[in-house]
Image (cartoon, rainbow, N blue to C red; front, side, top):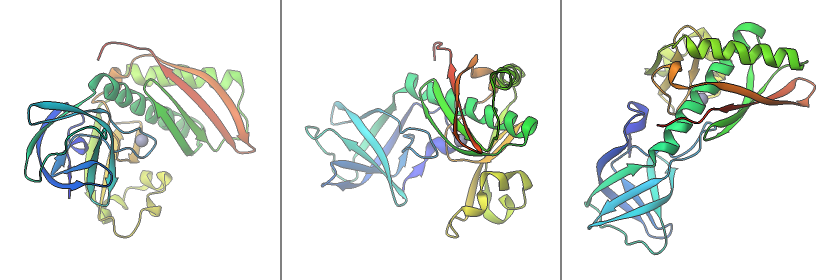
Amino acid sequence: MTELLFQTDSYLQTFEAHVTAIDEAGHGVVLDRSAFYPGGGGQPYDLGTLAFGGSAYPIIRPRKAGDDVVHVLEASADLPAPGTLVQGQIDWPRRYKLMRTHTALHILCGVVFRDYGAQVTGGDMDPLQGRMDFEFENMQKELVQAIEATINVEMSKDHPIRISILPREEAFQIPDLIRTKINLLPEGIRKVRVVEIVGLDLQADGGTHVHRTGEVGLIRVTDYKSKGKIKKRIYIELEDKPA
Ligand SMILES: [Zn+2]
C-alpha cells in the first residue's frame, strides 16, 4: 500500500521513499509513499523523476494499481531493487498549474450551484485550462459573462481551502456532499476526502488544490457549448504566472 502524500500536503515537491515492489512487465516501481498524483477525478497524473543509484529517471506516468502507486519508467531505465531508498521529484511548474486549474474549476462549480442551482455532471483539465459540464437548459453570452465576473470576485476574496479526511459515516452527514454524488462511492471506501473552499464549495475529491483561492489568478471563460438539452459545457483558462 502506497501512502498518498499529496492527499495531506499538495505542496510537497520532493520526497524520499522505499521501493516495496517492482512491476517487471510494466517497467514500474512501487513505493511505500509517494507525492505523485496518479490521475483521476479529471486531474491528469503528475510527471517528474525518480532518483536512485546516482541517476534520476523520468517517470512516464504514475498509475494507481489497487492500493499501490506504480511509477512507470522509460523502457531504457534501470529498475531499483526492492528496499532501495529513492528520491522523487515532482515536475512542480506543471503540477502547480494543475492545482490552480483544479481549484478554479471548483470555484466555477461553487458559483454555478450557488447562483443558478445547476449541478456539475463532468469535467476535464489540462494545465491552465479546463471545462465543466452543467445541468443547464439555457446559456447565453450574458450569462457566461456574469459567471466569469462572479468567479473572479470569489477568486479575489481569497477564500481558504480546507482538506479533511472523514470517516464515511461522518461525510454522509454533510448535506452539501450529496450533490457531488457521494452516494455513488463504493461500499468498500471507508474514508472520504473532502475539499472545502470555505464559504463557497464542498466536494468529495481526491485531487490537489492550492491553499487559498487568491493563488488561482485571473480566470477567463473562453467558450461555452450546448452538449444537449440540459447539458451545457463551460471552458475556462487561467493566466500564466510563475510557480
Ligand atoms: Zn475536483
